[in-house]
Image (cartoon, rainbow, N blue to C red; front, side):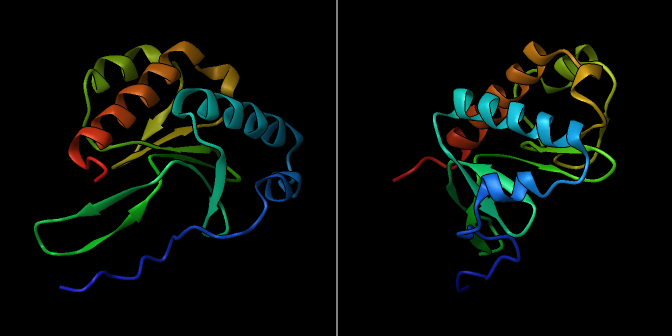
Amino acid sequence: MAKSTNKTTHTTQSVKGFIDKVENEAKRDGSRQLVELFKELTGFDPVMYGPTIIGFGNYHYKYESGREGDAPLAAFSPRKDAFVIYLATEFNKKEELLAELGKHKTGAGCLYIKKLEDIKIPILKKLIINSVAHVKKQYPSK
């Protein structure tokens, strides 16, 4: 199967410009804080994926179905209702860390946080580190 075209791909849009246009001041400030945190943890500068996702690093995946593509190692998006943190669906200590995190909701590979003040940042750091380690192990770069 040929490489599929993902809807969410790396763009040349400015991360700073995107954050500056976020309507809610607390979301803008939180986004800047998350950019620094993700940079520190991943060692990568932020890039835009699609119109609303800020990604760090990149990996190439290929599923058993033959579908393949590229995705950020770690990413987040400052949505209107919450920050969405994109994590691997499974990784070391995920459930126990989520239990310690603070006020949040989860989806398949997403963590929803209304305000950064509602969570324990050191726990979020561990979640991101463990997620990135899992992705790197599952999809080693060649």
